[in-house]
Image (cartoon, rainbow, N blue to C red; front, side, top):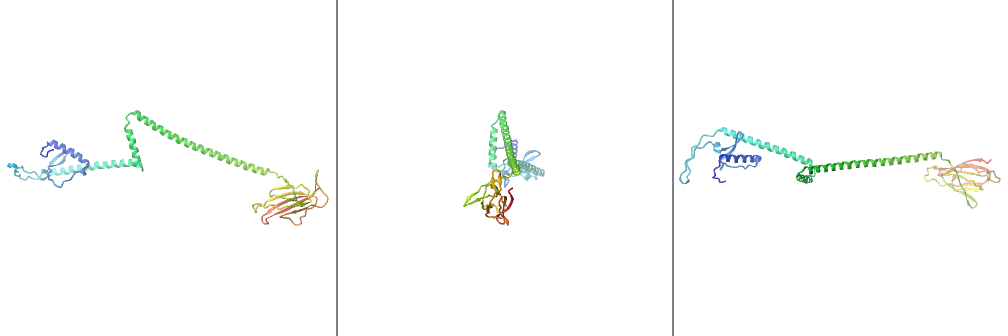
Length: 327
């Protein structure tokens, strides 16, 4: 616009109102001037209307300008008028306060909106903001292209289907875990029941177990019959022997264990009707590694029961000999 072009008052008012409205959105961005040179008027509020205030009213009215001289000579200045009405200054200050209040109010509302939006975004995206925003923007872009209800309904149906699948999967996983746990409990219970049954059967067997003597035979060694015994057994020697050596019994692995051995033999004569007396000298019987009671002598025509027990202090077997005559 040419600076010499004269604007209609209404047009000027419209321009100022539009400019004020635009600038009111960010008053801090308005430029500041150092002098009043070149300024003709200031905008102001009159009630709720924006009006244009000549600068002359702020300085007091001037007199009419003198006629121009020939060849562009300036006319004489008119006399200075009386100072302007102070009521205008009050209106100007009031308008300024109203404008500042309006802008401050809008700024506060904007700040609150931005703060609320930021908090909402932080809640949604958590720590991985970039990834969440990218994904969110992709979803928004996709949904922005969906215009028909059928597509939206299909999306909702697919989402529900996915949720149902997830729920079913979780339920199935939980059921499988419970079933596996039940199987393990059943298996463990069965194992324990089997162990208890085995223990009870063993106890019953031990209670009802009958001691059976093992028939033992001797070996020949230079005219002497030798007999080897093992701990924890019961032996019965039915042979007719004239000279017998009972070899040393091996000690138990645990030297504190009181291991036992039983031996039954006779010094009579075997016959078809059983053991009977015989004539002649009594057989000679010797023991290796065994502590015998004092004055123990093997006699002829006797039944003998010898109990060997391992003595953990002496670390040898002791023998308890019981005998009775053959009838």
